[in-house]
Length: 172
Image (cartoon, rainbow, N blue to C red; front, side):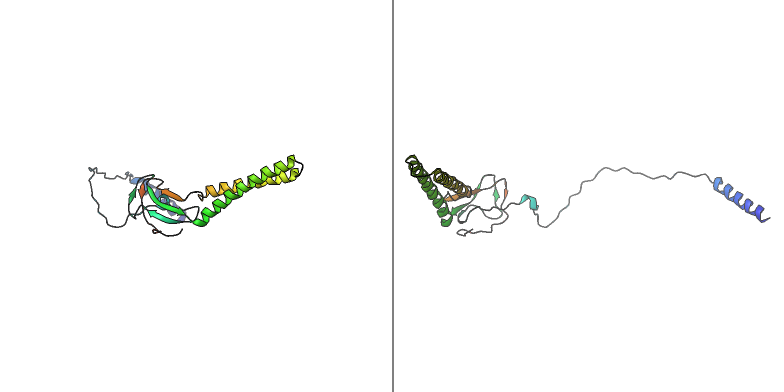
């Protein structure tokens, strides 16, 4: 008896599940013309860190002329400032040039002595090495910019000056 009642309930459930037809859901869609909105805002506009460059120098010097101010718009290759080379840096270059001149003269003298059998091949090789070292030292001094009395710094691209951390006469 219990078993017959359980089958009857299961049959009713099956009939109840199939007696109501399912309707698919529907959505109402409206179309509208786009509208133009104007938004006003207040604040500070800033550049990204990737767009900011700092100007630095390879040798010590003194700011002898400033040609720009903060906020100023600059074009590519515009002169930003002039740097007078520090006297100690100039002295380093002059010392290197004098050492090269001395090494060349010493090499010539040693070659003359070798021709007279008064010097050895090792002495000539040492004098040649001194010339090569002196040439390298002069080249390094040139790459550092110590061979110029003044250096002109120009803008690498169009932009504007965000800040100046130096003033006329500052040693950098």
